[in-house]
Length: 139
Image 1 (cartoon, rainbow, N blue to C red):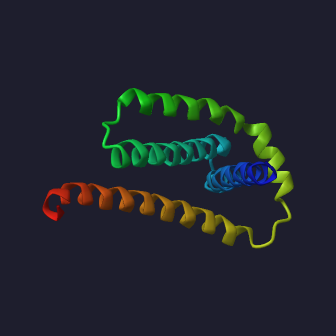
Image 2 (tube, one colour):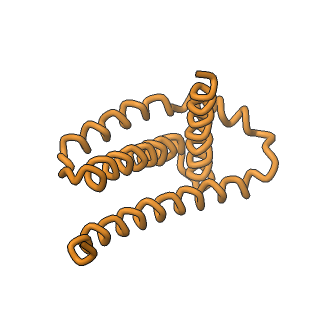
Image 3 (cartoon, rainbow, N blue to C red):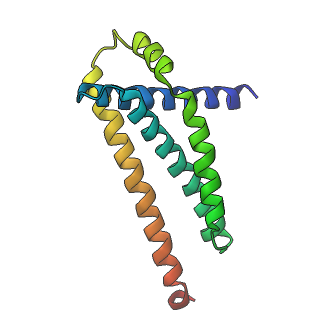
């Protein structure tokens, strides 16, 4: 019980940190409401993670087709969750991280971590697609 609570708390903090870093990035580039861009980044990340898990479970594990209604439901749920990433939350996080050391380096780390994750997910899906296409040749 404690470990699952701890892990969910860490994931929540990770998404908040990504939200802060993405919002800060947009503000540094001159965007007036950078928190909106940060909210889109976090929502997109959340959708990508959930849809990747669903694709692996349904399509590759059980050989089921993915219904587009499932995708829309996930996007709508993630959009509702994005309402938690508002200007007030950004200001709270900015106050929390204002004296952070190596903030530029950590910002670039979050950017490259997100790029690496997207690369890994797409690479995994491509591998699984090729494995599915070659299944007839292997057996």
